[in-house]
Each structure stands twice: as C-alpha cells, then as structure tokens.
Length: 407
Image (tube, rainbow, N blue to C red):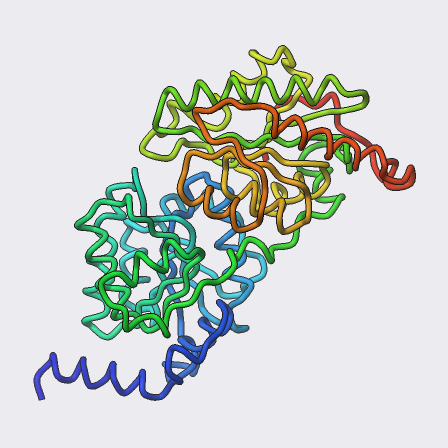
C-alpha cells in the first residue's frame, strides 16, 4: 500500500469511528465530536489558529469561550500572532500558547490530532496576508491525515476571491464546521451544497463568557469603578473610509453631548482593539477615534478611555455595570446582548449590520449622521436608569473621575 493510500485509509478509519457531522448541534458538541476517538495517551489534542495575540479583546473573548467548552484534560495549543499578548487561559490545565510563525507553532500544527480554524471574523476585506495562505495550509494538513475543523467562524464574500475559493474547498472537506452567522454559512456552502447538514450556525463563544466580578473590575480599573446605570459606553471602530471615520467621530461626539446634558449621567469610551482592522495598524485605532470624540464633544478627560488590551472578562464587565452601549465594534454589541444591557449599533460592516438586525437593535448607518433614532433611544435608556431602585443605584461607587485605563 502506498503512502497516499495509507493516509487516506487511516483518515477514513478514524472518521468512521465517530458519528456523522449532522449529529452535533452546538459548538460544545462539535468539539466533543472531533476530540473523541483513539489517540496517543487516550486524549486527542487540538491546535487552534485565529486572530489571537493581536490586541483585539473580542477575539480573545472568543478564544476564552472556546477553551471553556473543551472536554476536561484536552491538550490545547493556541497559535497566536504574539503569544505574550494572549490573556492567560486559566480554565484550561493543559494550554500552550505559541507564536504561529515560530518553530513551536509549526510543531503544534503538525503534531496535534485536530487543527481548528477560528473563531471570529478572520476572513474578509482587509484580512492579513498570512490568512491568505491559511486555507492552503489547512488543505495540506487535511491531506496528511489531520482533522481540520472550523469553530464559530466568520468568513465573508468581500474576502479575496482566490482565498475564498480555497476556503470553501477546505470547508467542504472539513470534519466539522460551525459558523457564527448566516452570511458565513451561505458563503462557505456556495461551492458544495452537500455541506448543509454538516454546517451549523452557533452563538459567538464570547456570549457565554462570564464578566469580571466587581472586585476584579476594581483591581483592573481602580477602586472608583462600580455599577452605574447612568453610564453610557461608546465603542468605536476605524473604517477603511476616511469619510466614514469623520462621520463616526462627529456623530459619536453629538451622541456624547446629548447624553451628558442629562442630570447625573457619565460616559466612557471603550477601546476593544489596539489596532485598526483593514490593514490600518496603529495609524487609526479605537483610541485615536475616541480621543477625537472627546475633543470634539468638549468632554475632555472627564470621559475616560478604557483599554485597549483589556482582558475579555473585564471588557464585558465594563458593559455589564453600565446602562447602555453605543458600539461599532461587533463584540461591544455581543457583550451588551449577553448581559442584557441596551445597545445601539454604529454600522459600516456587513457582519455588524447582520448581528444588529439579528438582535433587533437600532442603528446608525455611516456615513449618515441621523440623530432622531439615537436621541429617542437615549431617552429610553435614561428613563430606565432613573427608574432603577435607589438600592441598585447605590450598589457600588461610580467612576466619574478616572483617566484613561489600560490593563
């Protein structure tokens, strides 16, 4: 028997020992499905490669959520852009985080039983060059007998066409595929409708992640941080369009002024990424937009900029202890929905538009700067906050004097 035949035979035998892909119904079931079976030591290992270690709190929240769903004792290898920037995965006993372009990263790919691609919106407009090659790497790993799966992936039609076709081909060969939205599901199935039964849409893993406790928030953000239903959180995101960025800053500044004119209110600007997407790098970031909003609104240092490089639970805790969220970052809306805090979306991306429609929140479509809808929403949030019981309002100290915080 030749090498190719032995590889194919071994891969088919391993897969025949497991149930058909359509038998799993959520992300945890998917992971259990691919990680059971025979392996050295009786436990199958998994390597996961995604946009980790890149200063994006939303992506780190996805990783933490996935890690919590792994069967106990699973050896986990995380391939990150910068391993040192990945927050500790304290809930996983056997976790190893390595730089994805290092010898250790290559070894992790070649020696793990399962290779997972995801989660989050890795594939789309402005994706990093390395990700262009990832579907090809996945096909090669599949050919040498590795189970390659997709976990809570976001992939969109505006990604480069050639990379998109290779990604679709890999998805059609994958042992298991979970995606985070209908757009990705339709896109990955475009070349192989037979994948319909083996591809499912799952909730973003960050939804189930618990927010930081009040004590953890005080340690991260200062003793003055506490629950404040009259605090508004704004989370901005750079667009590749200068016009949309100007509109976003002007609109957000108007929203901030509108909110702060109400008695007793406060606000903060939440920076969920240290870099701009779409290849913008550190030239235009969440924080640079936030600084422009502070200046234009006249709020200055009275409105703190929190982040970037926040641990995911802390970022979620900031939102959980506030009264409302206005967000361009997808995970600002995801966190708000998870902790049942009212949200309003700033829209210039397909994925954020889709999620805002899914959860039924109001939106502002850039470069439009219409304010009637957001003013009515602010009125509702304020009314709900002042109607909160005195006991709840006094549950903890309010941070109205803090400067910019980075943890």
